[in-house]
Image 1 (cartoon, rainbow, N blue to C red):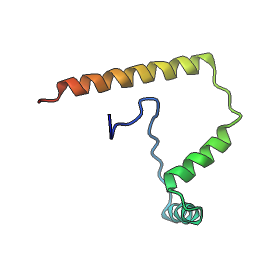
Image 2 (image 1 turned 90 degrees about the vertical axis):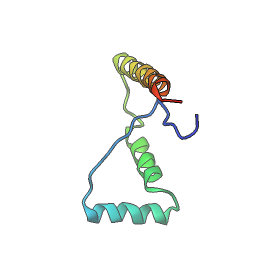
Image 3 (image 1 turned 180 degrees about the vertical axis):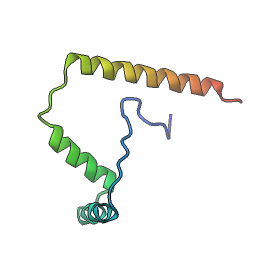
Length: 80
């Protein structure tokens, strides 16, 4: 469905100093990309060599299943 978040993704909120926020903003502008895209690229580069355990993958699979079933439940609860 349009305008729905991918159940395979999770949000990440972070607090930055105002100075750091504007530094990130300027860097994103310099590369003509959004701040979200810039941070995603930076995180991907830093975790490239981090290996997950089978338990991590099972946790991820469970979270995705739960997110998908929650969306189905939310959809069914809406009045017509």
